[in-house]
Length: 401
Image 1 (tube, one colour):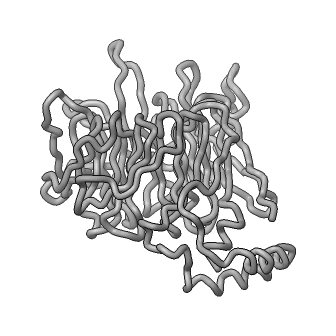
Image 2 (cartoon, rainbow, N blue to C red):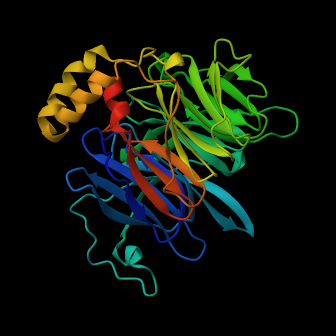
């Protein structure tokens, strides 16, 4: 059974910021941000056309600085936040701004072309700034965390030393600081990553500083738990299991991906060592949480089955069996292959690496699942190459059947 070929999109500038549109469940869309010191940076809105296996793009100017992170509002597909750096007083400072994508009819066709810039820049529209999410008294911004499954009115900006909780009123382009807490520990540690917990009524977040992971209650801004020496080196990213509360994934510079039960954080429940260099990103599939996507400086993206600690330990979804019949009608060419696959593969998926994707030639800083299609994901490497890939069909059908 042949899999669809990957779709590759190239940006003119180096890039490391990628996200899917959290509020979009009908179309497959991603945002990508660039890192250029010499030219205006850009945000690319990319929509995947499944019928033609191609990408449609819209490009927007981001003149504030190099983009390090993009996150999108769960309540409005046009609103997102960027974390970016720029030089102020001969020092590199990090900021965060909430933006709005221009309306579809506002093509800004009359904006002047910029001489000497690439074709993306000459066609780019200008983003609408809504509000900033930083206070210089709290230091440089590391990342922005939107409250999951909400209207997007609560956001956390993580600075190097503080957690800042904001109430957003986008219509009034205002961000009000509702609460804050400082990271107090020996050695002046700095936050490197954070993730909002989608369980427990959105009352908890997890953060990483150096080799430690901490949990926080956002109501009291007090520490709820901590995992000391979670990794042997710097922790780069975190993600919560969307379907199984208490389970948290982490990755870091020790080339490992680890999974934790935060009720008993003394030891990881599972540790993976499939990458050969720093692991920059770890993401649970939002619908089938046994599928975990990781990306690394070894230029590889790896899809792993962790069914033993997932909400689907047998690798089966009884309530989705009917969906495969509809898929057969839409993909009649695959019906014979599917029947043959079903006859030969009754056993559930084996634990471990399911697929390794090697279309990148540089460090892969981000991997993100589509919010509209659970079987499709994007990855981004520093050389500006974004790749759209799919879960192998054999894996997909084993999960569904």
